Amino acid sequence: MAFDLVFFGGTGDLVWRKLMPALFQAFRHGSLPEGGRIIGVGRDDLSDAQYRQHIQSRFERVDGDKRPQAEEFAQFASLLCYVRMDLSQPSAYAALSARLAERETDNVVMYLSTAPNLFTTVCEQLAAHGLNTPQTRIVLEKPLGHDLASNRAINHAVGLAFKEQQIFRIDHYLGKPAVQNLFAMRFGNALFEPLWRREHIANIQITIAEELGVEKRGGFYDGTGALRDMVQNHALQLLCAIAMEPPINAHADAIRDEKLKVLRALKRWTPETLGQHVVRGQYSAGNVEGQAVSGYCDEPGVGQQSNTETFVALRTEIANWRWAGVPFYIRTGKRMAGREAHIEINFRPTPHEIFKSPMGQANKLVIHLQPKDGLELHLFAQGQSKRGQGSGSATLSPVHLDLDFDKRFGSQRVGAYERLLLDVLDGRLNLFVRSDEQEEAWRWVEPILQHWKNDTIGPRPYAAGSWGPSASSAMIARDGFCWSEEA
Ligand code: BG6
View 1 (cartoon, rainbow, N blue to C red):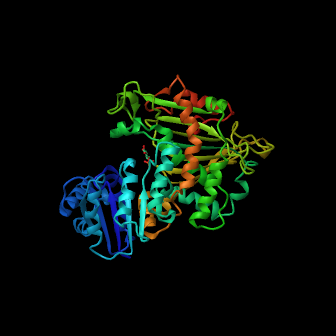
View 2 (spheres, rainbow, N blue to C red; view 1 turned 135 degrees about the vertical axis):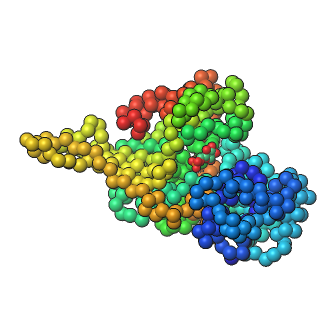
View 3 (cartoon, helix red, strand yellow; view 1 turned 180 degrees about the horizontal axis):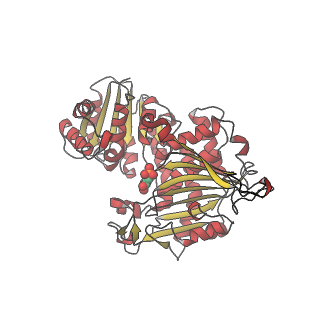
């Protein structure tokens, strides 16, 4: 299958950090379709050879077996070429058009890894130059807007040039192996389904914690914040994957219809829940892995008086028969105590106790997204009884069933961007977000943004290297629960 994959923002950070390594892995795994061409588009004045060198220098920093051998890289590099373009100039698109016209392909992928304010212009110009053929697919990176209105405007503009089936909105969390395994676990096994409901589940917690701060992205991040950067998209998509009903089949729209229903059923905010069930924080100076690090307001590109949140914890519910009354907690933050993303399904305790079990403990299923990728089922078992202890008086001990997918599947594992890029080339939309899902997610987060605008208190400080402000623990404690590290 001959394809042309065009990276708008071809010399940018995402191509450098994620997309090229993912394509190289796909190439190495032999899963990149043959006859492909990867076209970097950027403003720099580079020849094809210089672009190859630029990408090669990226791989020179890689250690271990991810570093390509010279021969291997030369083969991969032969797929790369470059077109110099200023995307804001309509006349510039002729150069791309000419490059694409050089050969016949089965499909063309336009990957917009640029500033989102260019999305509309690029789509208009692609259409004006006849580059929106039915064989063309367009990939949109987040952030897709900064609120509902701007998101709709982008979706509308893209929709004028491309049909929904041609539009691939990336949420790279959906490409993570653990998330695909969550679908497999829920809908490929009968075991959990009867338990997957309010009668058996006490609460669900989604944690996406990062050790990193805002790095070099202070300028971007300061106008964005954790709610827009992580909750509106990644965390809500995880919540959908946990809470959705079984789809009628594995087709993209069947899955996306079910996710949309979850988003629509999220409890609407009231002034009271906005006050009590949402905590925003901002990191101050602290210590991460033994290193002193500065506070958010001292990061390059960030204003000294910034009110931008680097941490959010919130509690919500899903108003439907399966989940009514079950709290879902989401928290995410930068400069936290560890890099750790997981989902905890906390089951209800046994209805009647005949054994002594550790206080307040019940079964839980932990879905680890990173750094570990696996499942952990927490059970209770009876170890060796001591003399004189009948089973009735025995104290149970916690034990884990631990499934490590990396160990189990090892080198066959496909990374998030690799998976998503291959799916785009295959035209599989299952792991991409539909416009109505995205709009619904914005509709749900907007009242929080509005509330913060009028809130004079601002984000609560937390020391870099901690688990966030104490108000986050207080919020969950009010329901009689705690975060995993506090158990
Ligand atoms: C991105 C956010 O979408 O996800 C970043 O913009 C964040 O701020 C990143 O660091 C986290 O992704 P991952 O895969 O490293 O957990």
